[in-house]
Length: 309
Image (cartoon, rainbow, N blue to C red; front, side, top):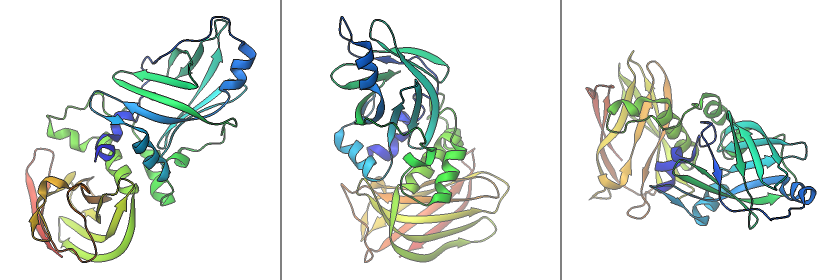
């Protein structure tokens, strides 16, 4: 579950405009023209590390298989496009006389040396390694191009609503963080990363508080299985809906099952109720017993519902 639970750690690394530093060094007597030609093209994320997470080649390949990319496009005119899973910014790049690479993006100008055919960018405790994918940059890249080959309307909504700051100021000890744009964006990305494998039409709640439905079975690119849900908030209060107990095929799997779906007052949202594939798997023949609760920002319960499948 590392990718879904930590996608916000990478998102916004350059968008925040913080100081970035690249690892490595350039040649002592660089061929500047040759270096510029070598750098032009599309660069894709190869790996990423932070204090809490390590995204190795396998995780990044799984992201790419799902169409969820982190890319740098550098053209011959010095233009730059950075896109991380649909969150995109334009900038510029240049090669200095000493052979160092300079980026200007997100309000920051940073020196980016290049070594061993890799660009290694650091932002806070996040280190991102990029490798060249193509000699031809995609300067027509659109934000949704990197968000996955998923429902176009939903992808556009995610891109349009993506927050400028994904996580630096979030205090996870305060329940209010669940209601931030950061978390809502992450929940939308989790939903968009799940591919439906079977349709379902089960209503959990249809009252003055919620319309709460299970719409299908799904599998995401990490191999986790679960249920797609659709929730309509019929109140004038922002609510978060989560599972409180979960039994799958007669076993208590609460620790390995996650639904956390925030729905703004009077709005609707879709979510993915997923189960960690290291411990359990959902199939069409699975039996499920679960209790769900809706809470407001003060953690006051406003409704409890049960589901038996």
